[in-house]
Amino acid sequence: MSRNNILAFYILFFALPLLLTGCGDDKKAQQQMQMLMPVSTYNVVARDEPWPAEYQAQAIGSRAVEVRARVQGIIEKRLYEEGDFVKEGQLLFQLERDQYEAGMQQAEARYDSAEREWRRIRPLYEKNAVSQKDRDNARAAYESAKAELRQAKINLDYCQVASPVSGYSSKENVTVGNLVSNNSLLTYVNQTDPMHIDFSIAAPDYMRRQQFARDGRLELPPDRRYKARLRLLDGSVYPSEGEITFVDSQVQPDTGVIKARAVFSNADGGIMPGQYVRLIMEGDILKNAVLIPQKCVMLTQQGAQVMALDKDNKVLLVPVSLSVAVGNRYLVDSGLAGGERIISEGLVKARPGMPVRVLETPANGSAAQQPQTGQK
Image (cartoon, rainbow, N blue to C red; front, side, top):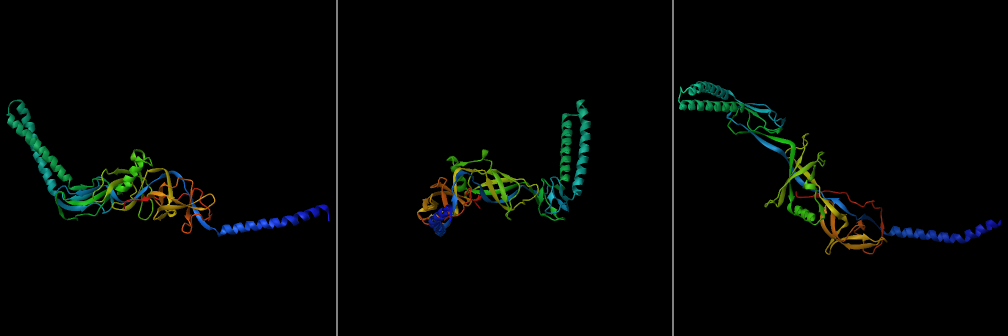
């Protein structure tokens, strides 16, 4: 055996027990680690966060117009299909015209007679051939006949009932063949582009946001012009974005809510009048906010608490002060400042001082943003 082989044999003979001992220690450490309770964590971050609000709302035509008869007469024709889209000025009903055409002819005859008399008297008065009283009577008769002719034309035109706005027509209120009087309701037309979305804001929610803004914790949108989105009853989001155009300056005493309105473009008719929707109001920004998932919080008799981890992955009990729910998260007033790790899964079995095994945590540790549910 060579000298080098003998040296290698001695090195292997003495080093092998040490290597086996090291492998045994690593295996034991891994087994101990596997025995620790596994938990998932959430990385707490302080940053600016949007604070949307969601409300139950109802679509209302921007102009819901009553179509009424302006003269008395029998309905001869209905010139539209109920429920169809009609344009401004489109004829909807035809009333009988006979008596109004006769009235028009009578008015034209009186007007022609009065006009001829006025033209005859005027030059005679300039020559002092007739008195001023005769001139004034002729002028008054002419003006009166002119007004009667204009009224007769108006009444004749009113026999054709046109839509005052563009929108969706409603069911006829009176059928063909019935006699209607002046101001009888014939149907409705709802102007649906743009579409109004009426909703209510709970007064406490509104006042809380105003207080946050005064405290510098909330940034309101420029000129307080809020954006709006719609979630339809089937869960889909309406593609067009709207704008909040009205927030009342008083609280309704019977309901404790503040009336508000949004306006949406509805050229494709995707929103129908009377339809119930969910309105999402966007624009408020929470400044340097600490938001944590609600599932991380334990509500006890001593108050709200979370389980945090130190650098050695040992559990710490941390009391926190909560403000409001923002979607599925809580806004933290005190107790957490950002940079902490808190337990999100495995919270029930965790105990203060217990070492735990941390499962893989998302890089940013942020929860999905969900709009806050407001007044329904």
